[in-house]
Image (cartoon, rainbow, N blue to C red; front, side, top):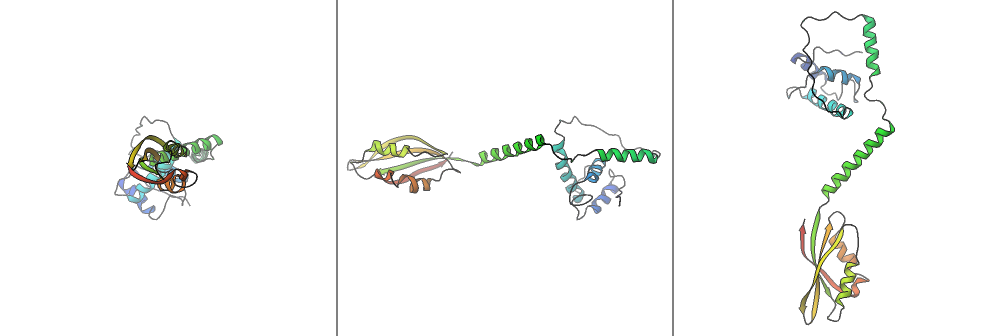
Length: 224
């Protein structure tokens, strides 16, 4: 059964459409159809006084806009004439209807379009992930077992630890007492990739590095 609306650029027309869309997602069901496209072209952009129409309008616009990526220059269309034009012959109306059927804004995507859409989605996800992944600067105190521990080999053991998101920085030996020195070393980490606690407990203080390393403490932890 065909659905009819009066002039949708008037308040009376928008009120009728507001009532019709109450409890509905789209004009003819739960999915957008050519009925929505036709009504969208005829309706004036609603204001806050027509919440159902506004919600429907924004939903249809969000689907149609990506289909037309070109830059719009702006077009003005004159208002409807006061005197109605004669009704077109039945034959002309049928041809116009056939032309509408030929207009398919929602046809199947080509392989190229699908590939381009997938690439855009992947780029957006990668960009979001990059923004979310923060970095931190961490200063560690690494202590040897005693004064006989080879500190050069201790540092080599520390720097031999490599993983994605970890970058070792400057280091120095700091006297502790009784001839013992500890290694202070900076590292920069990507927060989403490196856990400092796991790095200490599962890498630095276990074999084979615990041959040189007695303990490891976090001195400073700063977001970059």
